[in-house]
Length: 411
Length: 217
Image: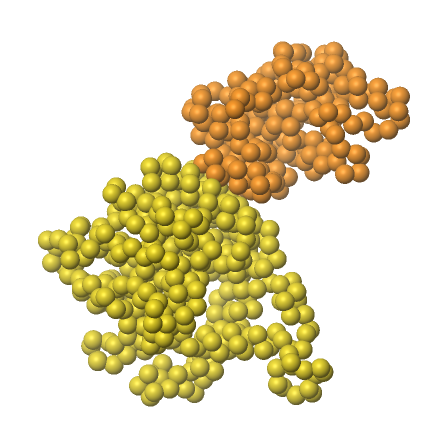
């Protein structure tokens, strides 16, 4: 992967000069929760903003560091920007090796040279979300007021706060308008929030596998995950960093439960059925007899190597609190009233976490607010995770939409 | 690429600059034509994934969906014109679909194949088998056209919804059109299809129209 540094260098900030409140520092090597093991992986960049960010919870946070990756080159008219918003447990390493795990980027089939989001043509930006643990300020970071990690002293952040932090980053990069904001799941929530909060900055939007509000069932699953973390004695009220422990068991259970919701019953059955794991017969015990058990344990185990338990609490909470219509007296259509953006909403038939019906509600609200909206339902049996997987119809939809938007803005 | 003649005849009925909903818009050829030549604000609904992708790539606003289930979500009088081209015979509940089209649009343009054409009648009479024609080329057991009708059948249903028939065109086998009398027996025997321009009756007089959905327009 060829990586081009963003032309808008921060030593000469384009938009923010002369405003003493926007002091910022560029950081060449963002600090992640865990040490970098993939030595040849690009770690990206980060910017620390000194100005406080007023959060939805009423508290303000400063300084704020936003870690990000870019792919491709910003064109002269700055009209070819694609902002990618990542999901709950993803990060900014969309299309390049993950510096901690060494694994390929999470959306390499979607984003890259010649891919539907073509980095030969577009300048792709993805930032780690506020509350995350891959370089952006989150609960694992040191609280300047105490000199100790924030832990549960970290303020509750919302999807809108995450979007505000991304807007600060784009300001710093000298980017006024975004040709397309793209994301799935929690990333899709951010996409909708972008269109609602910064309508003048969004030319087009692709919210995938998401909803305008988190459902009761989804909140319930998140609560199971959080309770698993908090029930781990190593969590220690969120102060585990001070004790040199981490609630690995709790976080792994949270991940296991959540992972089931990302798949479909059919996909699980096809992948594992009742197949036994490295044995001929059941053991009449509680060892992982079945392949599906072993798979889930592996998912949980590897997750704790790259994710912070408190970050998991905070980010799941941000999703739970997401309700775009609530900002507009329950009328979702009004959330998009000011938007001139073109939308392409994508859902997946077997996604029961963010089912087609939830995605369609957004489409209907956009239609009712006379926005320009397309809606596509991809037929797949792979559940919520389908947006991350090889789905040719999804690629065709995104490619066609990106091309037509790019033509309309001359990018 | 030139527009199919029957689509061109529909396009000719659409006022400049109007808001148009094309239900069953296919690959978007008509919508694109209307946007380009008549500056309409055009939207589409289409069942086929492949067609929706073609529309999206054309820069059109199209919802993947089903006329039978999704029209309920559209507010009343949201569009100047609703279009249903060569689709009504494939819907599960044609009368409900028509009522929705009349409710959502101030005017409705519908085109349909004519099952009363002499060749269809003759084929059934002589062969005693369900007819297969150029435009309806399926066997009875695998046809998507589950509600075929004659021009007279359609006119009778349209009248029963209280809609006024403002224009009626007969289509020949090449898609060429000529004006016709909706109730005349000639076109019902000789035309391959028809295009109707309908106007809904005023809201309080039409009991067959479903109430609008709960969406706030």
